[in-house]
Structures are given as structure tokens and as C-alpha cells.
Length: 171
Image (cartoon, rainbow, N blue to C red; front, side, top):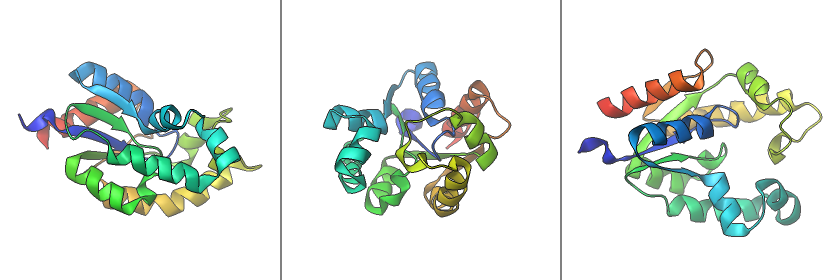
């Protein structure tokens, strides 16, 4: 069956990858993996602690290990927002699954992340400015690797899941 292929969700932090991915996996009977949670299991530390204690390069190494072990079928995977910076691993991910970009604008991201203190790259005095700066760098990469783009600014999580499922079934 063509749609046993894994579904890989990419997009900025706060775009809904984890919530949509979990619900989608439940709806279609797939396993669900969040790479940030897998990195935490691998290292025994939270993403925030990894950045503060070991640094970003240590995090990127763990992220590469996790990305290289992702299943090619039967799973919905929520990639961390910065996973697209790993070009070689993204090419492997792209070969092994349908890559869906959950595109969210800076305003929606800000709303979704208000009060969130667990994102080390956004732990800045002006979180919104950090979102805009990082989104400008990453958005072209999300577009480059995506097989499908879903604009989520005006969708709730169940609507987003329905859109992903439609695209996946027709891919």
C-alpha cells in the first residue's frame, strides 16, 4: 500500500508539529515520534539542559543520530524546528517519508509559544524578534525539503490533521 510510508512533519517551533503529529498517528494507526523527545531519551537531559550544559553542537550530534534512525514506514515523525539545518539527514528523511511543512507565520508562532520557556534558541529578551530572525533563515529550507506545504495560520489542530491526511493519501 502506497501510504504505509512515514509522514514527517517539519516547521518552526510552535507550528503544531507535535500536537498534530500525535493526533494524526492516532487517527491512522501509526506510531508517533517527536525527535526532541527522542533526543531527550538518548541523552538523558532536556533539550534546554543540553543547550545550556553541553552546547548546541552536542545537541546537533544527538539530533543527527536520531534522524538517521527514523523509520521509513508506519510512523508519524515531528522533527525539531531546526532539523532542516542537517542537510544530509534531511535528504535521507525526504527519501524515506512524505515531508509535510506546517507553515505558520510569526504571529501564530508567537501566540502558540507565549509563556513557553523551554526553547533555548528563543530564550531571548525579545522572543518575537528571535522568531522572525530564525524563521527568515529556516523558511526557505522548510520549502526546499517539503513535499507538501500546509498553511496553518487559520487552521486548528484537527483541521491541520485532516489536511495532512488528505495530502498523504493522495501522494
